[in-house]
Amino acid sequence: MGQGIAQVALQGGLRVVIHDARKGGAADGIKAVGARLDRLVEKERISEEDANRFKLNITAVAQLEDLADCDVVIEAVFEDLDLKRGIFSQLEETVSPECLLASNTSSLLIASLARGAKQPQRIAGMHFFNPVPLMKLVEIVRGPDSDDKTVAALTDLAQKMGRTPVVVADAPGFLVNHGGRAFTVEAMRILHEGVATPAQIDAIMRDCWGYRMGPCELMDLTGVDVNLPVSEIVAKGFSDDPRLKTSFPHRALFEAGRLGRKTGRGHYRYDENGKMIDPPSPDFVPGCAPAEKLFLGEAVDELLEFAETLDCKILFDDDGESPILAAIVGEDCSNFSARTGIDYRRLVCAELLGDTTNRVTLATTPGADHAVRDTVAALIVKSGRAVTLIKDSPGFIGQRISAMVANLGCELAQIGIAPPREIDTAMKLGLNYPKGPLELTEELGPDLVMGILQRLQVITGEDRYRPSLWLKRRALLGLSIYTEN
Image 1 (cartoon, one colour):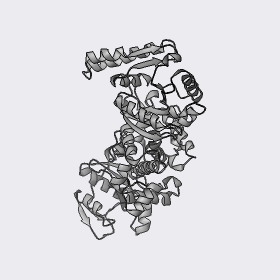
Image 2 (cartoon, helix red, strand yellow):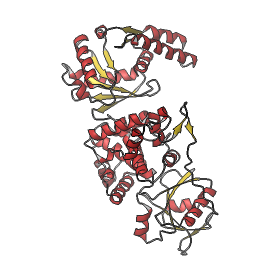
Image 3 (cartoon, helix red, strand yellow):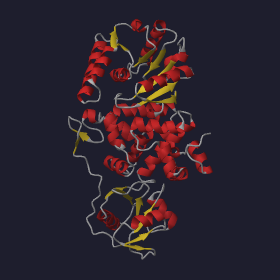
Image 4 (cartoon, helix red, strand yellow):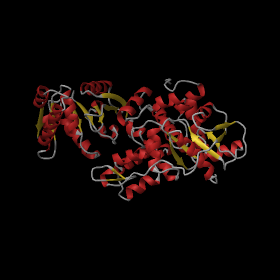
């Protein structure tokens, strides 16, 4: 990552000095940065003249003492607290009192790194994301003693490097590694409950909710040996808040050595080039004729609009034999049937909250008539959509994961990690989310998101679905989720 930081610093017009404790490491780093610049010339991203000028602005030094004239030092060694503290201690004896000291740590608190420092006010985090030249986000982490001058200067430096800085509070996972937990840990809970397969979860989150990758394939990409420890560190750092806890399937993958693409197997199997081998289909293929009639379980506009896209007769009075179609929010099929008195054997529930243009999620109760269910699935397939059939689950897949993503974003705002719109910016740039978590909440409606979470909490009995106070207060008052305290 140090090479990437050096590259964007050079492209920002800065003079760069590299030190590496490994003999020859700094020289190798300069060669690697030069090769990166040459590739940009080949791709016509920069001119050869600019590349040559950048190369003249980078030098290697053998000792930390040779950094004495630097205005800013960015530490990017591996995540070892004692090692980093030792480096900062040496730097304080070397650089000028005005020199700023930044750490690229992704998991250690700035408070811990600056403990015992003579001038902790000049120490802050500058957390880049990999690959640095492609990832625009930089988290500027304000430690408990970091002063405004330090934070402002590092923010300006990040902008000169062509990055988008977001100032965040010093807390486990900072912003992105904290806020990103919900997407994967709720998927792990869904797997743990046997509701759906990894392929089904991923397809729903891609096709219906706009994510570039589903949570399971994302975990395989980053590596289970990376995302499991991060999940556990963040959860522990926040006193084992159940909203952050992962579930056993996550640990099971780790213990089995199924770490994802790097080992050839995780949630999926991969070849030596990281290409997925024979991925299982998320699609349900009914082997029957489509239903000719549907009775609508509740008279809601979304359900009627959806039913009108299907080639069948819509019934408004139950004939006692036709399939019953319902669209439920935050509830499961079993609770819906018990609440309304609708015949659970003929009940088929559809998730309509996400995008149903290409894929529709269906679920039924235990004991449902599969023949009836299959006729509804066949009807939807006939309309040109794929069907993903899951087990009964409150909030299906998409509602559960989306509500948890939204709620955690609200919690980040509540505990002061960053302002709401900055949270959205960081999550979109750092994790390629289609919408920021508060943006998602605003679009769905704070009251609807809170309702999903409250139903999940009641049905499951789990505190992991406890709504953030930031969300709850704005939902109760009918306010925008962006309303400041």
